[in-house]
Image (cartoon, rainbow, N blue to C red):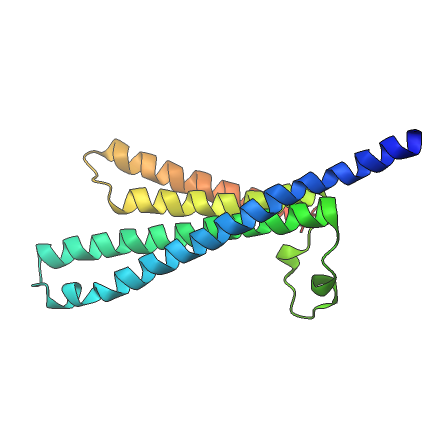
Length: 174
């Protein structure tokens, strides 16, 4: 009875495959959407070229920069989902033999513990937040010195976050 229960209990970890497959599908969808957005943005560059110099071109430039940031954000989210999917699979189902034997396998995709997965995801999420911050500041209008001070404070906090992320790598992190 105990062996049967333990066997069922051990095999129940395979339910994680639902999350692995769903995360992989959503990752592919995000890669697709970001690529379609990139192609669409590139196709509209002719509008920028034909715009008259001055406010119209400045406005189009601002829109294009915002679209580029959104595309980068989409790709980063796709990467988060990919890392999450691979990490769950390696932690709960099986090691990916091809990744272990590959010379080109990225260290980012090698997940050895739940803390390792969380740390890798946290780094990518921080990058997404930085991109979102940039996206909002690109279209920000500065009405007072307080606005500039808040922007500088936000940049300083991002710098501290990046410093702490890299400092944690030196203490045995990846």
